[in-house]
Length: 236
Image 1 (cartoon, one colour):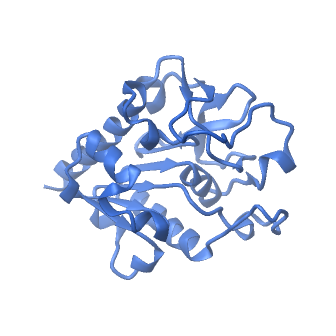
Image 2 (spheres, helix red, strand yellow):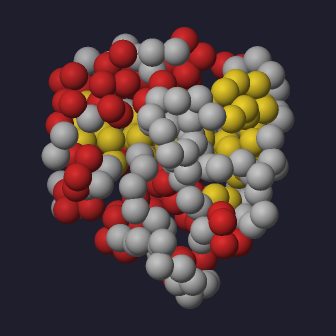
């Protein structure tokens, strides 16, 4: 089994100390089965050659890709990463490679499928929750409610769970081809999945890799690793 972790340059530099890397190891992956990559690796990375891909947090998706101009100074983009990850999504879905998106990952997937984002939650909404928590990244700050019990997330999480919140953007219009599987208490989309049940595409707005010491969050990561192992077995 081989899983790629698409990340920022800063995150890749952490190597095996990256929280995403450590969380997947805690979920049952072996270190030698994981590879951190960035857009600069595009010439050597083919998503269809791997058994899973995780899209991590980091820079904002360029508003150009959802037909908007940049509205706020808080928006920091990396178009090269956007284009690399869009191509990885295409290849992964075509080859039925499991996909897990985290934070930026859910936003990137939504834009790839044709959806839009709030460029800045404080500027574009009147949401009650502070979605960019000031404290520890592993602090639980609000509750997320599963709204589709038949979804992959719904089979892992019963009802609701408390999460961390480390983002200033969020999904505005959900793309065709995705289904919403969880909301925050103030109505923001917190999780989506592929509407096509033959595809394993799960994406969440919170950061489960920072919460891997909690069974309810580790369970999501374990589910992803298990799906990747099953994908690897199918190739044999």
